[in-house]
Length: 252
Image 1 (cartoon, rainbow, N blue to C red):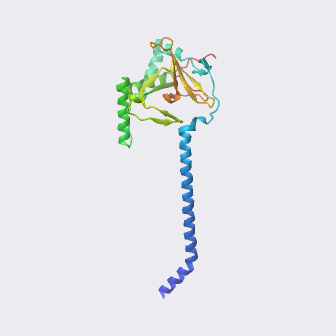
Image 2: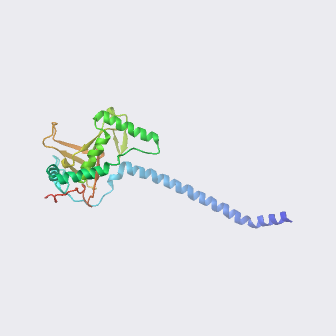
Image 3: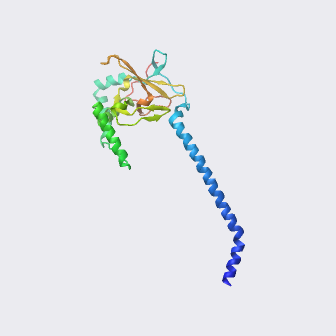
């Protein structure tokens, strides 16, 4: 009697079970299509990041022109007179002491390279040691100088010098360009740098000008791919940050 009732119940549920199976099939098909769409979207987004990222137009930015190159490109500097701040750091003990306190507060805990992937951590440490051997600049000294400029001028810059022959790193592809591995890191004096902004609102080139340079050249140009920039209290629409002790806006 029990078996008979069980068979009757199964026969009565047969349409429901069929619908349930069909529903699961549709869900699996929808999931498969969603995954396919996501895969295509991921490939497309990867292309955007590697090639087309800087073609996305940014909002308008303020310009504080300082100079132009031979081709007529305008290079913009910070709104504040950073050379005046540099002079104040030399002659005003209060200002220089304030910068030192801020810098030491940033660096007092030190730093270390950590990560779940031990091979990646070892690779980074090895590459940084290679850069020290090539440039004689320890990574700690680079970070310290970078932090000092960041506090003093509201903007810190590090130049990435690329050279495949002086590095064990690999070539990388970024924004459609194949770049050589980094062979050295150099802090850059913020007071000597201006930037060229492209039509989409991104930094395309950096220009460094030092009139009394010990090298033969007094002007150098660097691609945006070769410069690290960090700012403090950067006002909306500007490239450079706000110095710790601003001296007032630069005259236009």
